[in-house]
Amino acid sequence: MPDLDSLLDIRTRRPAAIAAAASSRRRPAGLFGPHGKMMIIAADHPARGALRAGDDPLAMANRVDLLERLRTALARPGVNGVLGTPDILEDLLLLGALDDKVVIGSMNRGGLAGTSFEIDDRFTAYDAGSIAAAGYEGGKMLLRIDPTDPGTVATLEACGNAVGALAARRKMAMVEPFISHRVDGRVRNELTAEAMIRAVTVAAGLGTTSAYTWLKVPVVDDMERVMAATTLPALILGGEGEAAYAAWRKALDLPTVQGLVIGRSLLYPARGSVSDAVDRAVGLL
Image 1 (cartoon, one colour):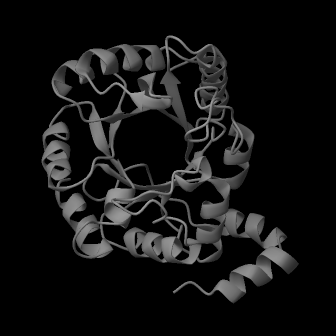
Image 2 (tube, rainbow, N blue to C red; image 1 turned 180 degrees about the horizontal axis):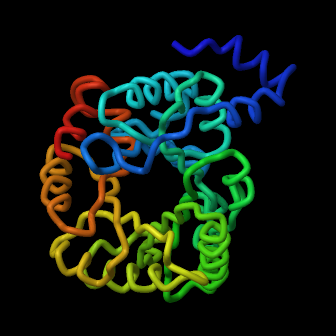
Image 3 (cartoon, one colour; image 1 turned 120 degrees about the vertical axis):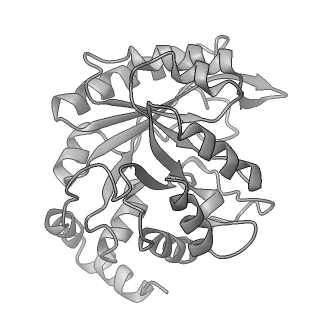
């Protein structure tokens, strides 16, 4: 298990050690792993108040347990990166778990799950400057487009600015777009080919250049049509259960799909260990 006493000692008495650890981190040789794809472990859910995994609404609430699961996943062959918010990435830095890994900082965490302001997803975590200063490889942003919520336009503008700011520093801008609606007061993403085509085309046009823009998209029916809507590289996200592996395998055959960004279904598998779940996902690559 992670040494909680050591983490607390650094955070209370030597906080400058975090920047030092980022500066001394061994950078990856490139974005891709030995399989020629990206295999990213996602762990930015808690900062949005989304702690559920499977049937447990507070599965991700124990930080030491989450860190141990992340260290296990990152140590598996073929896993070449991680996506997280500053608190999680800095713990992993101090634990020495980010050497040679592609590190993607999560940027907009203001749209907290279940709130009235969820669509107005403000940038409250990393910005382009802090990502570059830490030596990370890119930044990720969530873009939920709700045709009936005025908060969408502020999020669109902020994402466009972030894409341009990351590109100016030659850092990946990973955009995760959805068409979203409120159903019984809760935000739900529309997971149809038509909705994802619209979301992808909006996301691809954000910013002053698309040179460093990647897309993070779910698997939906008619995935071929969705990926035909853009020439930008894409990574596949999420999914749960046995069906997810079959969906990932099929999507990885599409030419623009360059890998996987998977979180809870690998860190908290319904059956078996974290290592088993991660190895199986890597095997698809």
